[in-house]
Amino acid sequence: MRQRPLALVQDDLVDYEKAMERMTDLVGQRQRDERPDTLWLLSHPQVYTAGRRTLEQHLPDPAHGIPVVSTGRGGQLTYHGPGQLVGYLIVKLGEGEGIVDYVREVELRLVTALGALGVAAERRDTPPGSELLTGVWTVETGRKIVSIGMRQSRGVTSHGFALNVDGDLTPWGWAVACGMPEVDMTSMRREAPAAAAMEQVRAAVAEAFEAS
Image 1 (cartoon, rainbow, N blue to C red):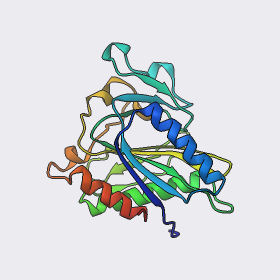
Image 2 (spheres, one colour):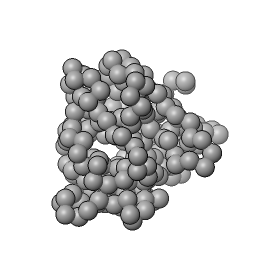
Image 3 (cartoon, rainbow, N blue to C red):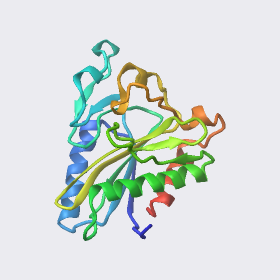
């Protein structure tokens, strides 16, 4: 894997739509070479985000009271909430490097971070004709622990990943996550009750992405 040091930005709980405004500004700065490649770590209040390929029948029942926001990233429906670590990646792609190439790198770096925290994980290749298996999965239980949805504009990536650390998993069951009705979403806390606290997870993820 190539070396790719990133500048680290950290926040706690940030409203999703406000985060999108700031991310747009960060992307513009990177496109103009006014800032370095950046990893922004944060969390969001409860929200579902619908990627461009989300089907209407996969949306949650509005009675649950969690807003649904359309977003320009790839992928399908995902959930964000407290206890989840979100990472937005604003990175200028190299010559001949595409967004799919970078997503594979993101998966592998997250596998490394989870391994350092005691959770064995893996990325998966998507069989022909199947729903995309982008993300990270636990080795022992085969559950999905990280969702990834990204895009690139003028050679710079945006959006990123969501790692379930110790939040409530119930809202995942109120919709069809990632376009896969049978997916079993999990968290570090579910896989290993003595799993690391959020601050330790942030540090391990930052190290795996060479971010400081």
